[in-house]
Length: 261
Image (tube, rainbow, N blue to C red):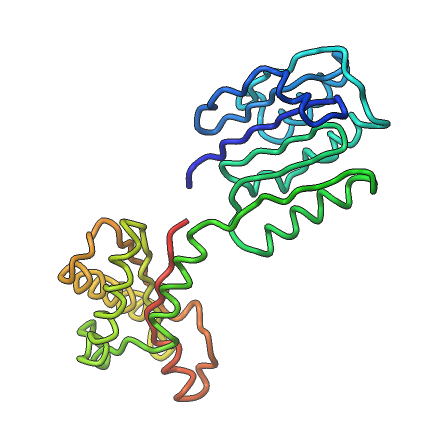
């Protein structure tokens, strides 16, 4: 997973354009948190930096805060500290801008639920005079995962009983999966093998691993770069149905495709 790169832009002055009077933020190195803008006093600056260093680690915070003659809304420093909350760490390639009573947050999150929750948490930490602009977007991985899920369409890639050889019906499904994966432009995909709980666990784990590797090999024959496909065998450890019935066991014997975050 790539380290988060984040900007925190601060402008205590009420007019939003006051932000333009501060030093332009530099491009941070991977993993750094760049904080820039203008605050009214050293105490406010120290409080913001202390909160950021507590959250991200002192070595990751790059201080470019200036001190200037700016107007500060009531309790502004306290609200800024509230906004520097742990859920900001869910955002990658992000930026939060706090200019007077205007808050804007941008960047990428893993899913729609996170996007809405972060914006909600920001809004509820402030008083009603603040305006929050939610510019967060869901990572492309979620849309790409949707493509894989739609292509598989809850079908089971079948293997010969007790073996890692793929049946003709299973190969036909993999042909469709390969066509979709070619559109993902090198995105890494994990192929995960699963079994039911019949027999010894160790044998099932080995069989699921061998089946995942067989899928990777076939995808490679269809033009998918082998290095972009990770494989793992989970054996019977992650069932999606009861192993007490034949139908449930059949559903548990499956290959799963997951976009690697």
